[in-house]
Length: 275
Image 1 (cartoon, rainbow, N blue to C red):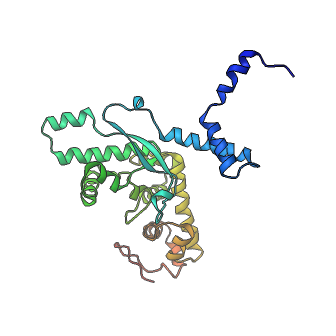
Image 2: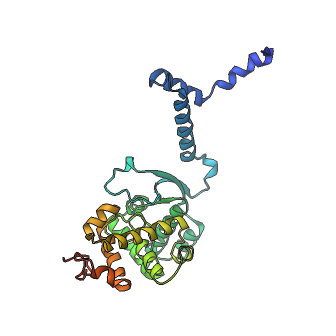
Image 3: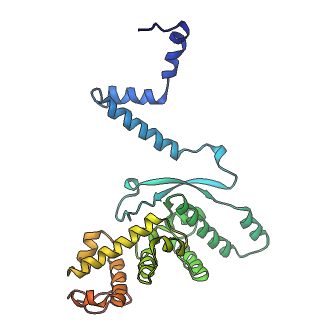
């Protein structure tokens, strides 16, 4: 074995003075990983990767920007789950922009500027793999959640688009999301790659394919005679979404519902269902 040089003896040990090795030592001496070092090292690597993604130097943030934690847009709705148990991702948001300051300086209505800001923040978070909830926006602007809801509704009505807040993207709460839009476009004959660019904001192909598959799964289960309650339980999606799908299926595939005694009667617009 080749003997190390004096410089190697002097300086090489200093390279081991790392956070990785500090954590490795803790795992081995205090958390019982003496005989599972390889697992400890894999966990440490993943932990440090997570920390690195969550911590951004101030030099990477421009004036007017802020770092915020958003719920991960991972295809799951995470309903009835505590926030600390939900996957989160860091997003960089343009809290104040020059265009907004110019609009305010030119005496544009504060409410209109705030509405546009909320829409922008929601779209920025989605573009980075996260979704903001209405209470995030309430905290940003120090206003009530009802006002945030009114802002979102106003933008959606004026712009004729859906805004990607958590309730619409992940079907949390009473809102029916883009999933219904995807189903309608599928029935209109569009392919998933085309639908991606027809939604506002533009969706990635994976999300659209996921929405399309859920719709197809609902059709299959209804065709096999399952009730709406059973469908939402099997697929873990909102009952209101199931009922919205039923109305689309009723329009395009009435023969499926004709064979299902649970959904032969109409579903009311308010979402109530009679059997």
